[in-house]
Image 1: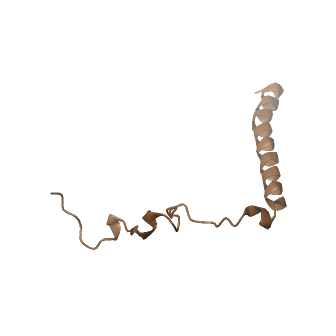
Image 2: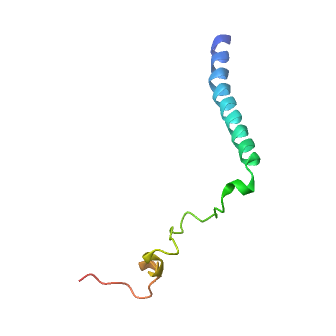
Image 3: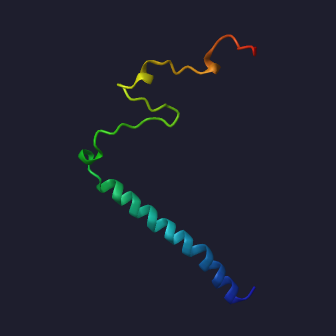
Amino acid sequence: MGTQEWILLALVLVVPLLIAVVVTLWTLEQAIKRNKKNRGGKTVRRAAEPVVEPDSPTAAISTSSSADRSTPETPR
């Protein structure tokens, strides 16, 4: 490979990496600037937890799955 190919290969690898680093640093800077009072009382939840409003009728329904049951269901 000649010098031109090495330069082009370096550009193809370095330019996207540089863009990713700049965007990541900018995102982290914005997250640090964000004040706690601006978060509006949002709570962090796990992705596996269902979103249930406390006043909704589905709040009283049990969220147990069939994997939690001790006896397997038989098809009818």
